[in-house]
Length: 105
Image: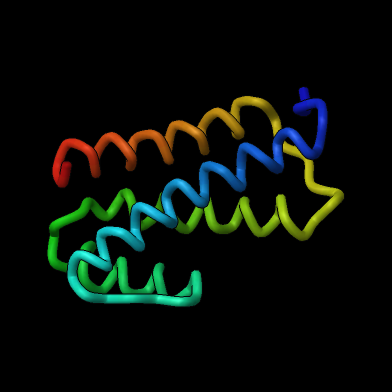
């Protein structure tokens, strides 16, 4: 069963992605690493936080999945996603938010 309202699921994908993205940018900023592009944020996240073991590899995978879905939500008007998939993406973003709060706040 698809999720009704393209603009609604686009909002959820975009919001979930940007929650993750801005948390990553904040963590990188704490290390004096400033990025302007989304691809650079993903690369620096992997290089400085994932490879060091400071952040779990799972969050690297989650960031990529959220990025890919945000691309579809922003640029593919034909995209359709089941409610379970939308909920999964929201949970991935919330898990990272909880991790950052627990470890860094």
